[in-house]
Image (cartoon, rainbow, N blue to C red; front, top):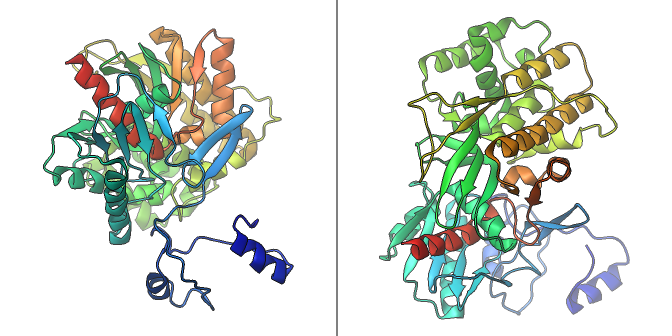
Length: 461
């Protein structure tokens, strides 16, 4: 670390050797801000505690930023960035937006501005839930807010959504991926119609399935699902998120059925015992605890597993990150094939307006990856071909839909190569791409999207 307070300068001057610093918290819990809290929650993790008598008002994590396309892109918006406001035209006053379940932030609308909180984190335990409520209480005091309405995610079981329902205020639900798109539109000051590409790990869809590979055509007040990635099943549900090998099996099952167990030379099969694989195949055949998803994030996980990079993860996005970092940018191998299919009559999954819908069929892509992996093609080449294919898919859908302004949002666009390649291909195709800068593309930007989406909807009533 570099010293950024007078106290740091005094300490590091005496040490005269490099210091590595990490946040004072257990994984998935908020940072400790009180001495007694630190001594209790971090007991046994640190040899010594350096304490002082200056109170800490609120927890604020370090911000995380990547450089993409020559400019900053904030992945975690906290110290130094929050709660800097974003001015939004036509914003409804006195709104509270409670954000998503993962990478949570909250937001309030005051005098035409949206104030987005510092990173709170994943609402997976009581400590995180308590921190979430403290931030909301602090924001309400700081801005004198008595919310007339509360914007929340459509998912009924999110901690943030359940909290909103207890506030005795009108709860205004916003679909997760629409909030992503609106967040990016607000940051780029876009109005009118855009094609929003919202790719992430998971979000509650209007049809009750897990969305995550979405192309949403928006207007001023609504959206429709113009296209989505072909769905596949996740054996074990949430357990598949922790085990990319399960996601890979679910993906292959859609193509090969139980015959996937007989693919010669597939490294994935070495990640299971015979009994484990039989249990998963039985779950898939009977659709037991095997939800369907269109998630691009899970597609990344599956490809990382097929390539032999990662079969289990210890943190969210680990498999996708390893697939990105394995990429060989020098490879000239062409993209894999894919297909764009029209949804048959009776299976339309449009949202607030009727219209044609496209399904992106990844089957040729996955078959190509299986062939390459079984033939020993280097992982870096497989990764680049996969990433290049995703960029071509976005270009292909944009061409089919016909909207020239394309918004790139969702956790998948934390990936530098995917974002840069997609922007380059869209610009070469005559489209106008937009992406994030100061607002995270991940769920840290959801609260902003919720506040703006609710304002739009009210304006259109």
